[in-house]
Image 1 (spheres, helix red, strand yellow):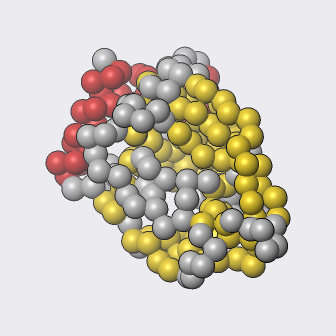
Image 2: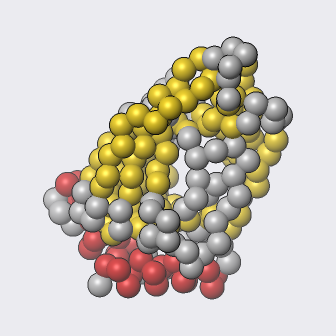
Length: 206
């Protein structure tokens, strides 16, 4: 189902029904651990448009991050919370020379993982607006806005994430000052873990 069709179903109040339909065949889902702390179940990709389910659960081991949870997308995000609570924590990022605490890294994704490269920009950051969203709520975030998605410790949550690429934008992340260019391989879930992820989502939606 296309980005537009999924978006229309979310707007029509049919997000839960769509999600249950989308996970009916776990064998077709190539789920991966994402370094931002969730499991990603990619369901649709068409050019610059993408649709995924994001799952936060203590039942599945997370991926390790080499940078931080503070990042910005090269695409405009529409996120619908299926269950649980998600905090969209905006970051106020300012350039800082000798007083910098972080470096900005560019993340370029490929079939085998992410190439993470330091940029010349060094920064400090502070917490800005904190938005809290619960089941059935939808929020949007334009490309190029630094933020982090936070689930309460020990909490369980899942969202429908719809992304639409914005030309000229880049995927960026804040990380330690001294880290160099490196590659982070994809961490796929095995069939048993994927089946568990599907069961966890279905159990909260039925």
